[in-house]
Length: 316
Image 1 (cartoon, helix red, strand yellow):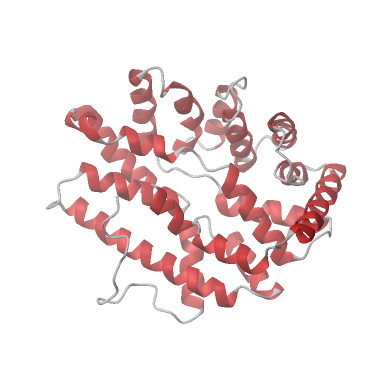
Image 2 (spheres, one colour):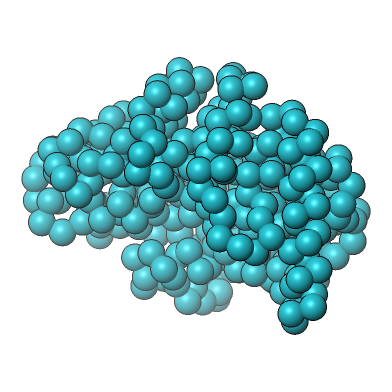
């Protein structure tokens, strides 16, 4: 799980290292800039501005209750926006006194095929009831996909921050991705841990985990897809077509992430580069399709050559 997360976030790390500030004076200045940006976003008061403000702080520990309040306001202002409901749900999950069920119900009504809408309740039952946990896993397995609205949320929050004109576009994009990746990713480990070990000797669990793997592989981020692939490799025999398909999909995904991490280090520099990136976010629902489009646009082969060595091939 750690290796998968490390590989997927390498692009963000490259961006931060090239655009971020270092040293105490720069950090203090950046903190003051974030405070100014946050205040301007709250004053602006529209849904995306409030959601963007919720993820900004001056470096001090974030007030979870205040963040929840801002996301609740944002989601209430535009109740038909699934990505705002998802942000609200993720923050609610982080607070023990917040009941995620009403938010899940609304998100499920907006996007009924999305397994992610059940993740809040799943996180609350995992330590107390295996039967309840299996019930939620089974419900996820009956879904169409597991989407966290990654592309649309980066686009919406970046645009909101740009409207207050406190930062340039590259810094805004990098900051938005960094804040979101640190806060709003669901507990993938819980899904992975359920579908492993002795549980898989039970036919009902095995069947649910096979279906869940397929749902996750259709998710809208690489990390979701990779968790699905990891589960698929556990629940299908090594000589099966399903297992071979998972191995092939993992090899392609690892290759594209590696290529994109190298490409981003040299090609994401100017405002125009970031404008092109935002245009791709607007054009594609899935993170994977953005990576593919960027690789193709630079004339690189999006598929691994036969002699390419996958350093992650043996990690599940």
